[in-house]
Length: 269
Image 1 (tube, one colour):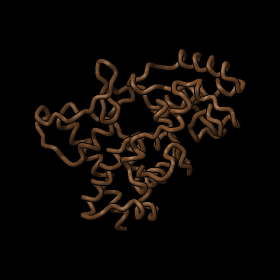
Image 2 (cartoon, one colour):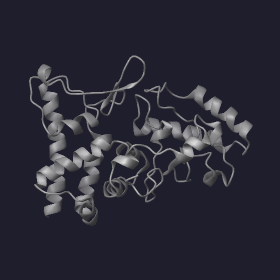
Image 3 (cartoon, helix red, strand yellow):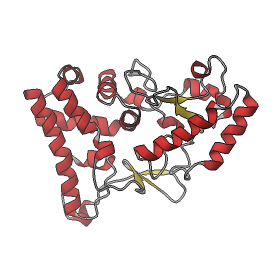
């Protein structure tokens, strides 16, 4: 692995439940996801630490979930919830560290052995410094998970920044400068705040859903739109934009470009 620390629970306000299906719905807005987590948290808090009771609660939660998963290959675990009283950390409510010792993860959609050993692609595709930058800039359970699992988005943003700087964009330097770090957070936060995308989009980042419920990578149809490729387009796709005409594409590009320039200005200040 390239990353030397645990991406799921790195601390500092960051936590992730993406591999447990946290965002695997057409409406994966903060409000919708928080409501689902709160429902699961409240239901499981009343369940004794017994496998039979947790199996039954898991079945009830699966039957009551708000929508069908967007991608069938990504399972949505009903044992995911808020593991702290302040509801700022998402994690597995059946994990021994949460239950006080009893391992109830087999009651979910994965075997506990899978949960214990699985690492998402970000562990191998991000550098340690890149992952630390995401952790520090996105110290928030919802935003962190969206960003840390989208390697192309993180790499794409930093690549655009390097082109703007005409030199390296070192994560260590970005983390050392408060104004630059704040600008990086606003740039990464586009995963949540970018306008005119719709919460019920049929796309999830760079991926669309095929007839079998499998993720299919998306591209920009430059011929149809009558435009040429631009360096911002990878990030535009990662943000979930599906431009229907050149005007929409140009607007999305400018949004990305303006945030990259803001980081560069903060570094130079």
